[in-house]
Image 1 (tube, helix red, strand yellow):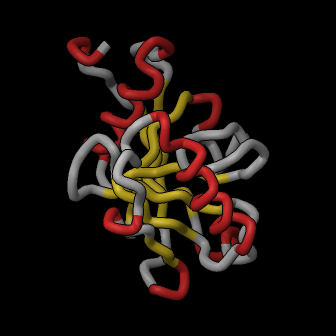
Image 2 (tube, one colour):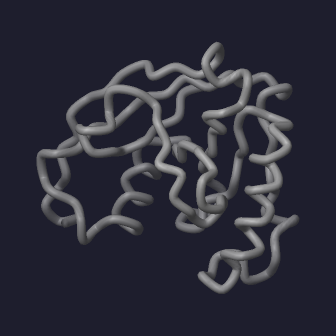
Image 3 (cartoon, helix red, strand yellow):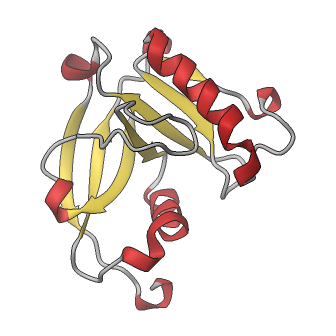
Length: 150
């Protein structure tokens, strides 16, 4: 399975995670966020980083994840609180994602996109024992922003 991530060129040579807290993880949890399509990766970046984007400093990464169920856990939308799309739900979502991270039950977590119904993002646990063997950076290509998005 291929998933996609947009990042600055500085961080496009390897799959690394900052440990910064986000919607689905707490601080010092080293996860890589990726999207199931290039288009969703673009939307996620615009929604979260539009003020910091520069036209020619970004790469789009293609990441290989194993598709086998033994590597993938999913949080279905019906299992989320009614307000899961709001900032108010961050604490609840961080607890869900953090539990997955700490238990290392699966290498990746499939989570519903807040931005597009029916699409998914993926969290990859970079400290999971299967990370080094089963996750690989397939490509890193220049990404050109359409000026209408900036």
